[in-house]
Length: 341
Image (tube, rainbow, N blue to C red; front, side):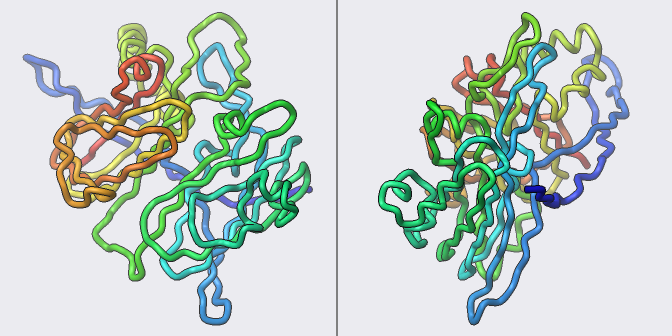
């Protein structure tokens, strides 16, 4: 089945920022880098009787990623990205997701939502009961899942299949996961930018071309083998240009402007406990303890949970974010948040 899907084009942004060198004027390099926020897809929106329907199409396929100079991850993806494109929907709408399986194993789409017909569960129970058995999608097949959207907030989805000796864990860690942002009706207008970060471990199918480190812990499918120390070594060897070469290749990079209201959605879809620490910005919870300042600047995340928080950057800077299980950061789980004027 030859299915094409469209992604919103991601522009090239010229980021110019300063690095202060003690005793000298700030160094102002010009850096050309491709900005790759979490991918988005454009839904089709139609009115079905009195309920608005928001339609998405996701294609499951094999995708290779160079995760280090010495290794390739033979991952599985929705629409070619890890995480999958973010699905956005409003309260009161019907979310309809057509999933096409162009992979050689059975897969599914299981959303952490509450109001849907059991036939759209996308789990082995569908096979066992025979109710919606097709939601466990065989190679070359497809299924359209439907969900009534009643509550605003953030949630996520993932593959819930197990096949050919592989467990559900293996299917998820191979890259088949993504987020759903449910907006209020009418939507909030004070959020200028949403940033989704999914924390996980890398999947099992990594091919090592030669000896060298591989990032075991990843955010948005990326990790820096050796963590911050490795970035320092790259800087010593190749200078700032060498570090920039890693932007959105091994290190996830997100951008914002001074004064913007930025909402982070941080999800742990790994098999281990992770935590998320952003340097230098006041984090205000927008999830469970809504409106309170996160004084520790760290979010603890057990498996299968998420938190959202809001920041308003007040100065141009390059800030680090990382897992505060520090061994995980040393093994790859770091990223950069760049604030521009």
